[in-house]
Amino acid sequence: MGRRFRVQSAVVGVLIGLGCIAILLRQVDLKQSWNALGRLNGPFLLIPLAVLFLNLPLRAWRWQLIFPSSSRPSLGACLTVLGIGNMANFLLPGRAGDVARCVLVGRAGSLTESSRTLATLAVEKVMDGLALVGMVLFAVWALHPPHWVLDLLRVSILIFGGALVLLVALRYRTRVLIDSVRRAFRLVHLPSLEKKFDGLLTSFADGLSAVSSAGQMLTLLLITAAIWSTEAGTIWGLARALGLAVSLKSAVVASAVLGLGLMIPAAPGGLGTYELFGTEAFKLAGIAAGSALALTVVIHAWVFVANIVAGMCLLAVKGISLAQLKRRLEVEPGAESTAQPSS
Image (tube, rainbow, N blue to C red; front, side, top):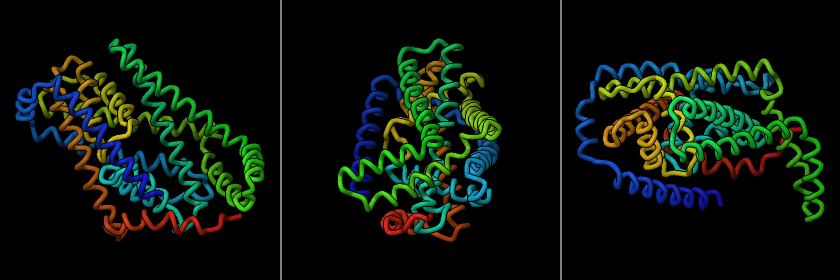
């Protein structure tokens, strides 16, 4: 079932990506885009390179702090696994990189630890989503964007706001939820699942400890703000490399629209959806469609290559190959299903 789901999600993502490319081809002058790419100034690429060496450690540090202090991995382990996961998200369908992070950071074969790690990823995604919502709200105030941006904002508030409420409820009402689900299992005559579910949900709730401390949440929010500031710095540097006048304010808006647009299921690497949302974001800053597409392609290529190179290097550090990682992702869930949750 897992393999079938990954194949189906890959097919759906490719179809969505192709649809986005078709929309772009109807509104962009490809000759203008090609001419804009010819103005690429190599030395300015040092700016996003410097930002990369700041962004990835910041993300790893934030992820480490989300873990409960009793089961917190080292910063080096978080950095290595995060880099590998980012690479896998670009190369493999179905957000395989997030699965890889759950598998690689904890004890092999432990479904309980994977459940706790999954909770930390949920907190991370919600914090990123809320940060992006704040950045789009800034865009609404500063740039007066079209209606589709407002629609995207409403959907994002609904998704990430609802997710935050759900995580807080899971953190503080874990026992109530466990009792409710236990009763449901008894009604459908599946008592054997009660104990396993109890362990998994308790472990998941333990992974949400970051949302129970105001001080820790403030620290995580400040790190998240720094992370997305570096994302905007990458966009600004690559725009300068193409000789395009993109202000830091417009770079912030573009990074937010790109981040929210990637919530949509897409082909591996976000091909198609990334180009469509990036082009639309830079058009908000007054850049012609052809130049906006050229800038988006450069950003996408940079992000892709940087994450692949970093991921491959970190795979070598961990002593496994990409093929071994794929096999592990396919085998590990089956192995985990036989593991008993810790008491």
